[in-house]
Image (cartoon, rainbow, N blue to C red; front, side, top):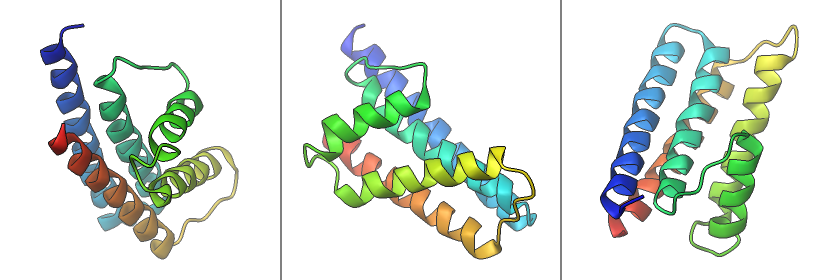
Length: 131
């Protein structure tokens, strides 16, 4: 894929990340905290995929995207370890709240997950601006 196509894909994925983060906030405002956690995870996930787009890496499974990002970007100190931890927590919470029965998500938990997604997206933006 030509360099300009990779950059276009990366920009598209970042736009998707930001739109999804906006959707998470709309869910919070509507007191749909479980949905806010889901959208927060996906916002961060799309941001990570924006990074991978620059090197034409893509995976079908979420866990493979996250594992690759952690191995090649977090472990390599390109992104701080805290970003890897926030991403893992976002994924764990999303899976728990999406698949477990009788789960009640608090407002505080929703807010925490949105904040984590914001931090992941900010770190990715800073990285992409340098590229």
